[in-house]
Image (tube, rainbow, N blue to C red; front, top):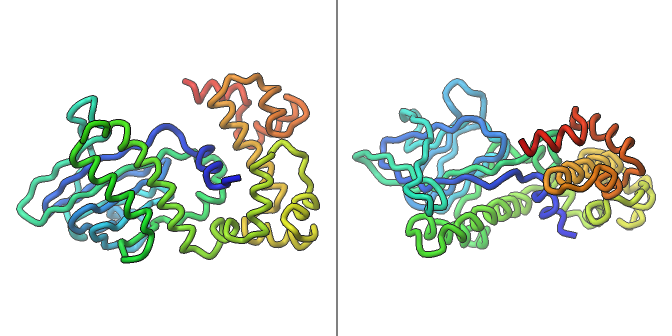
Length: 306
């Protein structure tokens, strides 16, 4: 069971947005809060990632060619040629319907920087531990020998957005989709706590794979411990310490996250959705869903489709 892929499939909402930005110093772009995760890829030149004036946030980060930054919480921020530069709102244009993403051009007398700026739409109701553990800024420098797959993806994306070769309208969105996975992989590989530690730990990873592989099963802590290869008590302590919540709390959260996805993406009757995530009746499922999402399953489905 690919737990990371399963989590991302449930959390993603709609298609990502991105723009190919060419700016000549001095320049500055303002990005307001997004409900998802923002990202910036420096293809050429240099830039600074800074919090917006007056906003609480992070220390400014200098970005060089090939660097990638992911703002997992979508905090307001700016990308600038130098700290203190004047800001304009990020407003990309699309030259034609065939262009997969927007473009931004900022003229000026100074050095040029070429950047891909974008955002992923993510559902944040009761954030999954993966999103909860993401820092405000994940900076992935283009250091030799590190994150080879990520930086190969960066090169491909830059080529597609800059040259618009035939088929770019199909290829570029797929590359941006894949870029999120590569960024998260790189972050998980460098982080030794929280969700990354849970996936890296063989015991907890086996339990997560069991839950994600069969969320409808009436799992007990003892059964999950046996699947992970530990006693009930030892497993419960280890899972809670790494994931940040007890095994059955995570199971309930994942069942309802999966149910929300089924409500969004299918027209299955509520009884079928309930059975698919381990509830014996539509009534019991609706009660649990309302407690989690503050609305009925039917109301959630209608709101998402409207």
